[in-house]
Length: 115
Image 1 (cartoon, rainbow, N blue to C red):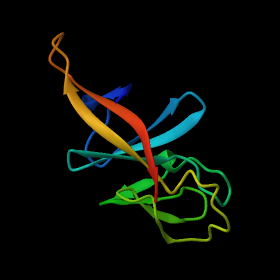
Image 2 (image 1 turned 90 degrees about the vertical axis):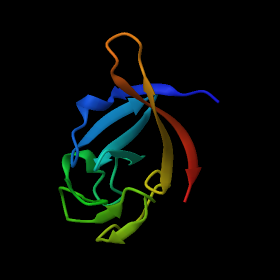
Image 3 (image 1 turned 180 degrees about the vertical axis):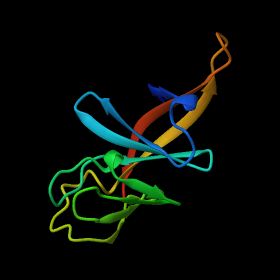
Image 4 (image 1 turned 30 degrees about the horizontal axis):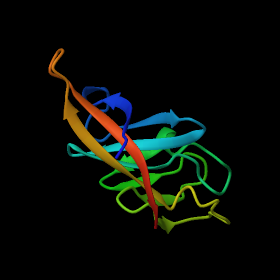
């Protein structure tokens, strides 16, 4: 199985999110109390970046019109989302791996499945 380095664990504090790109795929990585989750980073309503929204527990709120998504599943919890392009329902597998150099954890992601 192949993984792609997307960030160092220390770059994404608990309760924070980060936008990353793997090729042309935009991903929102969320740190929920030390557990990392990743979903597609675009809201299906106005194409806003979810990583620019707010994270409360496992729920990310879109910064434009307050659509909400669960980062553990990618599922919409409330909306005005009118259509989804398939990316939001995609959940990405994340893994933490220690680097010998500096001992920092590294997040690695791989597109996994559609919910």
